[in-house]
Length: 273
Image (cartoon, rainbow, N blue to C red; front, side, top):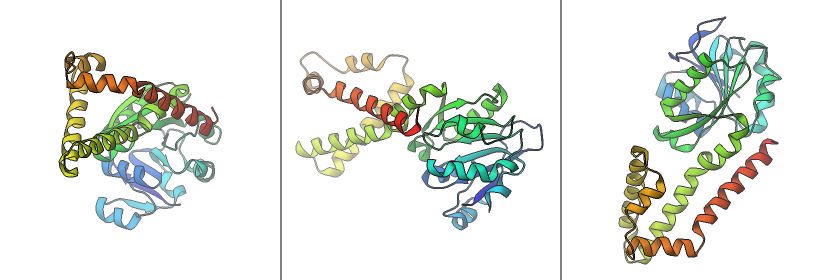
């Protein structure tokens, strides 16, 4: 396991022995590179390629975290304990540790790190790859408003951020962490239905993509509730009414609710909460 450091203005604290421009990322995979592309960082598996592409330095984790103002942990949950134990003596008490390891509770970090190290737990989602991610973040007991604001500003380079109590992280996981898969599931069904209705697959996909994109943009730009936006395009006895009535008859609404509840329960089981 290697770590990565980069010089980047984070807006973080200038106290202690940390360099406010220094960020360390521990871990790899899709989310590691996603964050890298958003604010110039790196991961282990493709270190050479990422060094060339983004101009960052890769090194061992203990060296990476030294003087880092922000330490991002983007490893598999089962690897967290080992890597935190490895780097704990080298993390400055003025640093902020930002965990994106799914299901790992803040206490797991706070018990291993020095007093004063601020810990923030975050649940990302995959649209961060295109700068449209959603991050649910929860601050630990040593995280003050200034350091929380610095983390929020950092993550906003990859999308939007909501601050929630840690006990709501399972709900965040169920709604936004897993949520992109629900949209892709809907897209699959819409495309297949379009093909069944006589469209070629390419046209059905284009229609579906732009419809989902436009509806999401309209929802984001409107102060109205989704139910009101839906009513505006549902004329009595019209085509949309026929579709919505059929969805209701097949229990689509309750199916979605039940799925989100199941995801939240599974998240709680995995995190031991």
